[in-house]
Length: 43
Image (cartoon, rainbow, N blue to C red):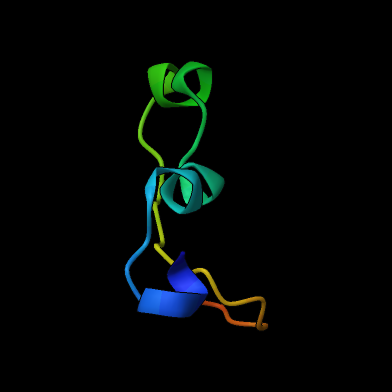
C-alpha cells in the first residue's frame, strides 16, 4: 500500500517497529524509514 498511496499500513509499520519483547527490555531508537537506502541517522 505504501508504494501506491505513500501512506503506511499496519504491515508497513510492523516492518520498522521493534518487537514487544525488545520494547520491554528498555528504550530503543525508532526511525520510521521504509526506504532501503544506506543512512546513518544516529551519526
